Structure formats: structure tokens, C-alpha cells
Amino acid sequence: MKYHILILSSFLCLTGSFAQQKIPIGQIITPQGEIWIRLDDRTPNHQASFIQLAEAGYWDSLSFNRVIPDFVAQGGCPDTPEGFNDPEYLLKPEFHPELKHVYGAVGAGRDGNPDKLSARCQFYIVQNKDGLARLDGDYTIFGHVIKGMDIVDQIVRVDRDEQDQPMQEVSLDVNIIYLDEKELKLD
Image 1 (cartoon, rainbow, N blue to C red):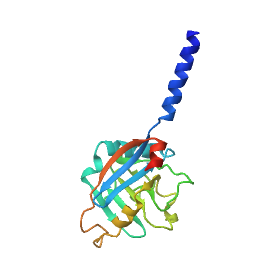
Image 2: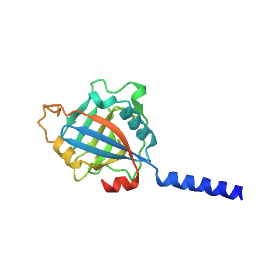
Image 3: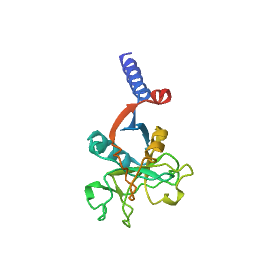
Image 4: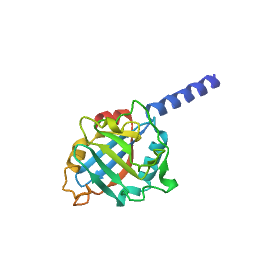
């Protein structure tokens, strides 16, 4: 009898933990408002990297540094003429044919390196409502905006210079919040 109670108790604990499983959501707070990103499990290395950098506060002193209407809002470390050469901040691509550059897709920036290594310190959000199919298979998509595309639409329309940098900084406060499916549906 004790054995059956132990098994039943273990089963209830396991099923209860599955029912309460929390999902990591990227939360970006900007002067224009808040953006939520659902990270994709099919890109585990990019997902883990985004979570690690967000929880470390990496982006909190950075900004959306490249904004182009009908293209992308790009944030994180700025592009440099040298490209990205710090191996600690490079990730192998995680391409999946079903992850496309559609409106709201979140991808990892990169320079022109032949291995298509991602710069984990930089991300972008596709703002083109028709998508950017020409980028598919060249840049890793690792998430999708689930709340706040109206904020992204505002960000790409700020005044910018000839390098597409905002004239007034669009600061980033990037966090990870953990929600279950029920909480996601309520928001």
C-alpha cells in the first residue's frame, strides 16, 4: 500500500510540475513601450545565449542602433568595420526551414563571415509586413514578437541619420520573464 501511495504521490508531483512549466519570454522595455519575445526551442543555443545575456544585463546599457522602416529594428552591440571576431560572442547558425523572416521574427545579427556565425550580442526584429524571405537561411531566427509589434513599428519610424542610427537613443532594458501558457493567453 505504501508503495502505491509513493508512486501516486510521485506521479502527481510530476504532472503538477508539467502543468506549471514556465516559458522564458524576452521582455524589452524601451522609451516607446514594451516588447515581448517568445523564444523558439528549435534554436536552443541562441535561446540560451539570449537568456544568459538578458539575465546578465548585457544589453541594458545599449540601444536599438539601426532602425529602417519596412526592414528591421536592430539592437545590441553596434556594427563595426572589423565585424565580430570575439569567439565568446559567436554562435553557429541554427537554421530551420520553418523559421522564416516574417513580420515580428527575431533574428541574430552577424557580419559577412562565410560560416554565417551569429553575433550573439546583437538581435533584430523584422518590421516588414511582407517579411524578408531573402534573409532566410542566412541569419538564424530564434524567436517571434508576441506583444509589442506596435512599439517596433514606432521605433523604426524615429528620426535617424544617414547610417540609420536613431537621432535620439532608443534605450534597451532586456529581461527574461517566466510565464506559463495560461499567463501568456491572458496578456
